[in-house]
Image (tube, rainbow, N blue to C red; front, top):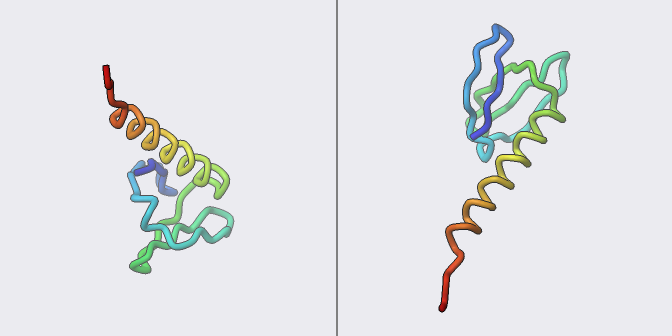
Length: 71
């Protein structure tokens, strides 16, 4: 999940795998797969960067957990 900020300053977490699209209006409009949406302060570039960082972190954790010592 990634953290975003609503226009009123409230921070929240969103499951990035449920994002269908990001509309670029003066703010960013995150449209979810169930057609709900959120207007957030972050730019599309910032959102994409957070998704990439989160995905990389999850893959690193998985990589650490799958290391097997075969001594």
